[in-house]
Image (cartoon, rainbow, N blue to C red; front, top):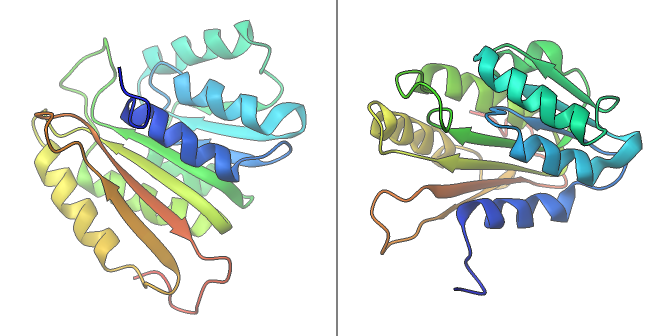
Length: 196
């Protein structure tokens, strides 16, 4: 296969590994089947915390089973809430926030993330990020409403203060409708008014 670019998920995990360390805290804003939740739990270790959100009971059920099976029950807190609620339930600064936008793999394709709640969640996530923290957003656009969510999200991220945030887009140009990755790194020192 390929050595440098394996998948969007691999790229995401590579960025998360650079900032999430034992004892840290992270948010999985869209737990889905729990893969990112488990990955983050492995990074923060027994003294860390992972907060996970999803509006679908099936996603929370699947992720809860995976968390219990892997021995992470003491460090993972799951909320059957939309990601736009993270600012209510997460009160500590975090090292990373990860999103997988779109629909639950293997679930109802009519239940999708949308621009209004996603923009609120991204804003809250950026406020929660510690200086030097990273937000990774895996963006799927092949479903109804996906292109609109992409357009509004990218428009918002373009307006972030360049002295406070680096924003990068990694796209596979020769793969039709493949998910792409948006990475936001928060500066180690954020200037006043860094958020729009």
